[in-house]
Length: 488
Figure (cartoon, rainbow, N blue to C red):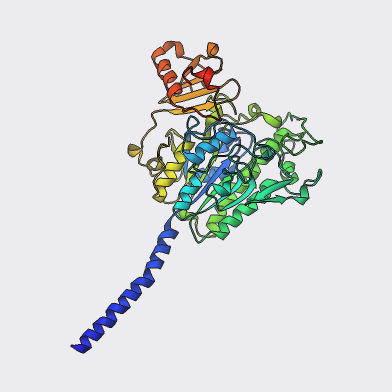
């Protein structure tokens, strides 16, 4: 009996120790099983600027391949029609009637109005789930050292441009590495030794290498193809002479503002634009290839999209390239061309390859979608709806938006609402005498050519009500509230 008790005690002790040893291994395995996320955000890339979306003058083979391996969305919308509010909607899961940053507001000498510390961001969501987080590219949601600095908003690693205005220039004097300003000696004076998107891309690939053994969230807000129009000589050489007639742009080539926001001159704007897109396409391909080389591709979600419609600054020629495809409007418009953007999602084994979705979604849906995937509760009072059922091919289980809402604080004030197939657009918001609502049926008129407001006064009245009720007042981004609503 004593021998039996002794053997039993030894067995139980060993079993407990073995259980204690196995517990951390199981936790690590569970952690590794969480998918990695790579979210690539182009800058001012139009709905028609990818060959998979209809571009005819040049090809984007790597992005096209991404679409063939995943799902292409035909009705995805950006957060806004310009940079900062669009990115704020992405990071917070709120549309521009609710998100903190609702417009481009400069903070000199460098940076934009910061999102406050209490704002919950997508990066903080990932941090709460044990992810390593990195941003490589352009931020625009808080000047260096502010509460809105990406290092204070949930990111572990930051490399790139803090400031949108500095991001206008492709050979900058400096970039930011975490909290430090990194002087680029190769760009002193008029020298062009360091093309920033290439350096940022090198750091992006290194982040993937460094974090291959643990779950990571990688946010890649590229500055391509935002003006200025500039590409390395080797890329310019491949495109020179292919897009006649060429178009020259006279910019700012000297003086105190040189490389401080204003765009540099470009004699071959068509070739430069196509060359920049080729470089962006190659970088997307290299990011995807890196995940394959490291053996993590099957457990990595890759998203590619754009922050708003195509721009016209710096000599850009969206009409020549048909950058908005069948859509009306460009950057700063709230017509479809200003806010409908390409989106491609690749998730091996979860998202069916070579599929297309017409699900209506927007930037503020990304946060709840990612949160659901990693099993984290979404913040309260956000506007987004998870589109995970769509990704999983479960269309019947997909919730739909009652409406989508945008507001734009420049050019006299602009608002837009999409509800079902109806799209309402209101310009000159601050001039109430001229603030008429135009109404379009997108099921028949994707180009928003036929204003049918007079035929549907009841729908116009409904849209007007939404425009008034979908927003909350802001003390910073006021939207000229006194002129807009007498009660404010």
